[in-house]
Every structure is written in C-alpha cells, then in structure tokens.
Length: 565
Image: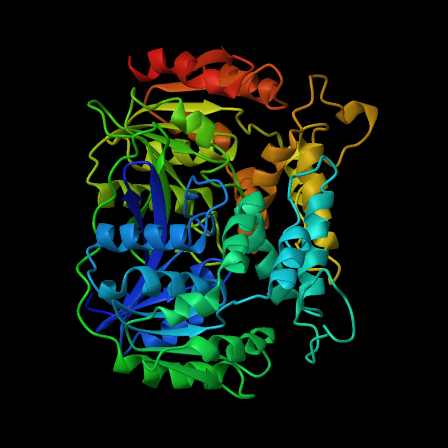
C-alpha cells in the first residue's frame, strides 16, 4: 500500500464463509485481534496510531462484525486459531507479529501455541486462565442467550447489560468487590458497545465462551516464540498474570503495564511491537464466490471512500442493481437480492452513510440526485457500461434519477412501492415522519426506534395511530426482520432524517415525465404505497404497471420478464 489510509476488505474462506478485515499503513506487518463481542472497528484508533510505521491487518473474528460464523457448534479457541490460519493463507501472509486484546489475546495465544512457525512474536494483553469454579460461573451466567423479542425488550436488555459491565466485572455479579473504580463511560461509548453486540446476536456467546474455556496458562507454557503476556493494573484480567507466570517459558515475558491509561499502553505497544514486526503484505486478493448461493460481500472503491456491496455470483447477461430504501441497508433487502442468484449478476449497495458504506457525500445536502451520482460512480468502478435497476420505496427514486442522469447506461428500471406524494402528503411527512435519535442514558432511544419501525407495519404513516391510519392487511412485524431494520437505521443514525427527507422532497412526478428508459411501477396489495404507485402509473402512462405477489421473495420472478424484455 502506498498510503496510510484504512480500507476494508473481504476474503472468502473454503468457498463457504467470508472474513471481513481492515487494512492500513505501510511497513512490516502486524496482525491486530479485537476483544469480544466487538469487531475490529474498536481498533480503528490504534490502527491510525500505528499506520505510519506498520502495515496493520485487523480481521473481524468469525461471528463478530461482518465476518461469517465458523459454523462449528461450541468452538474452542483452537478452532478460532485454525480459522485465523486459513485467513492468513487466504490473504497471502506466511508469518506475522500479533497484538491481541482480551478475547483477541486468547485467540492469539491459541494461534501462537498451535502455529509457532507462523509467528515472529506476540504481545497478548489480557490472556484468560480461569479457575474451574470461576469458569463454570462465567459459562453459566455471563453468556445470556439473546433473541429478538416482539416488544423490543432485547434492545433495552442489551443496553442495561453493557451499562452494568461498565460498573461491575463480571457484569452478572454486582458487588463492591467486583465494582470498577472508574465512573460510567458516556452514552456514545455504551451505544457503540451495544451496536457491536447487536451485530453478532446470539453468536456472541461462541468466541466469548471459547475464551473462558481456554487454559491460558497451558497455552502460554507451550510458546516457542518470543512473546509478552501483559495486562494493565486497572484491568480485571491482571489477576490472571501470576498463574500464567508460574509455567511461562523463558521466551515469554510477563508484564504488569501499571496504572497508565490506553494512550500510554498504545504508546508502549507502538515501540515494543517493532521488535517482532517483519515482512511485507501482498495486495488484498479479489473476493471469490461462495458455493452456497448466498450473496457475497465486498467493497467498491469510489472517489472519497468505499461502498459496501452484497453481490450474487457472476453470470452472463446484463447486471442488475437492487437498491434499499432510506435509512436502510443491503442486509434488509438481501432475501430479495438472493432471488436473482443464477439469473442476473446482482449488486446491492449500501448508499453513502448507510449500512457499512463510507459517507462520501457528507452529513448535509443529502439528495436523491447525489445518491444516484454515487451509484453511477460505483458502476464506473465496476467497469459496467450498462445495467438494469430495481429499487424499492425510496430506493426506486434513486434508480429513477440514475436513469435520467445516465439514460444510455440504465436499460430497464423497475420501481416498487413508489413514493408519489401530493403537496399535502409531502408537507405532513416532512413535518412528522422523522426525529433525531438522541442517545438516552438508559437506552430508551433503542425502544423508540424499534416501535417506530414496528408501527410502520401497522399504520400509515406510522404516527397516524387513528382508525384512518390502520393498514388493513396482515401485519408484517416479524421480530427478526425488525431487528435487522432497527440495526440498519441506527447505523445511519446521523443521516436517517436527511435520507428520508430527501426522498419526500424528490419530484417523482416530474422525473417520471422525463425518464426515457422502459420503466415498471409495481407494488403488492398490502403495501401502503400501493395506491401511490397506481397514481404514479396513471400520471405516467408510458410506464408499465404490475401488482406484485404478497411474498417479497417472489418479486424477482414476477419482474424478470420485464427486465429481460
């Protein structure tokens, strides 16, 4: 790499799963391993600090962040070490220096123990080596099962759980002896922890459990390469160091890092890891398809950053874009995207500032026109001269504008659930539909978002909870679906209002008069926009109309004859 800029990548392992990783810097290679239940996102400040001297590779552990789970029931840390070896093989790294923190330190310890020939040296901060009774307690009580609930109660539970962990360790045993000496972190810090936890869902228990089950002292006793096993005085895991020291070999240094804070620890690390870091990293490999027919994840480089994309395997014929709605992401529409697998090479982008995409258009001045221009940049980056486009709700407006901006590139446009508003509707939605997401110290903002999204399936608009607002169809309020949508909106937290408002302000009527490409307007009977979509078709009779099947997975089959025409 020629710059220190951090980029994000995916690599496919054995054709069955993907690992997401961050990469930055230049110079000798250092592998960074994060704690649970977080992802390598937590390491971004450390990556920035080290990137002027080292090449940093920071994967999300399987089941955390954006990495797929291992697919093993009850995995051990040595299973994660095996997975780490496959990751290094896939990105072309033979030997690395390692820094791991907490669960990352345990993963690193298992890797150093099992694959010493792949390690120059390691600094492991917070290796776990629990007494049998403590281990039994943690495995029984620390790893509470997690499942989305109809009322959103799981969201508030997650907030309370991480707030409690900020006061006690272990979190499930509040006592004076277990009380942290520091005050509560700010709401932003707890919110970030909760967001990382919600990404993993119940899978969070696997890497955590593997760390608790690791005999860290035995793993360290087997080390054959130089290593430092350490912990700060303020870290509860500093209590593990004496037991590990008893059997540590002479090539391992046991170090209490003292009372200094994170900046001091990282400053020490920046110098110390240089004793081990060697070699160069090859360029990131291209993503290869998954064998299972699932969409594969990737990143597309565009001016100003990267866009996250889910894509199907490549097939012959014209490619297709599937576009999500405002304040949503490509995971929300993944079931629809997958229905095109084997029929079209399909790309589902996260729009800027949504999902896992960089915000390349900034926090202000969000418009449908700017969104469409960014999709055009993605087409250029992918080397696509033409494509078809399908967008739902506000995502259809992005496709409509793109077809106007690039009439030679977009060959067919399909729009479902079209926002076709009169002046009074537009004014009402702009005044009432969105609200700022203000973090609450007890997590109430999570419930507010959850119930707003749930009410979207019960009322139109969601805030019109009178008889007039009732959606007279079977309610679609599945907790798993709502969990996915809530997480997507919270990812877009600082932009979700601007995103919705840009769609409400867009002149759909005028755009439908200007568009020249073949255009299909469609909606299922249950959608509140069914009437709006019919009105849009009546006002633009050159468009085609279709009533979609009730089940979204059947939409691809219904629309393909038009897209293939």
